[in-house]
Image 1 (cartoon, rainbow, N blue to C red):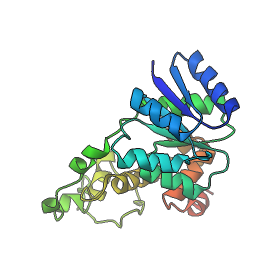
Image 2: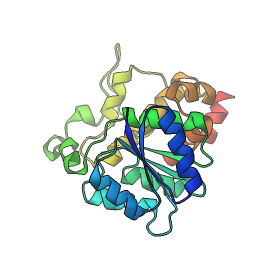
Image 3: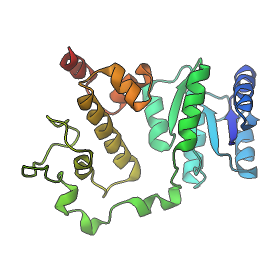
Length: 238
């Protein structure tokens, strides 16, 4: 199973998460502050880190930035907080966190998020530039508009706008410009991903939640983070 580092200044949270994860067969290391987390990270790279945002010495977001800047963010990091704002969660995601857990953390949500985090590949900061599209290909039309659908010509669509009819999955790929930083490309992909499922599920938030594996609260937060107008989607499903 996985080696998981739990970083939280509250002993009750550390012990609770440790017991749950240990029962699932994981090896768990505990740190009560950023200093201990740094030592544990350097001693043996964990397969996943659960990182609290609010800590007394160095907060979790600052530690995440530090690891990212030093090229040490080559493991999935899931942020945790009971008081963080949406902006804080968005910032952590842009830095490199793969997910966010809101306290109090339920057993089902913890296990589901940890499993998803462990299954998600992480690209080291030193290699991210290799995934960016070369500037010489920026004008390639196949990456500025979707490929034609069967029986009709290609029609360019505004970035971030949902198509009027559900096209084939591959037609979405042309809407992502690869000549940009990885995080921005990932945001565009996630926006297209959720628009696709909203359209195919007739804007039913319940079915989209089931299809994407996100709880409704997290789903609404994610749509807001990506700039998708949830009020418009709701009215469309009425």
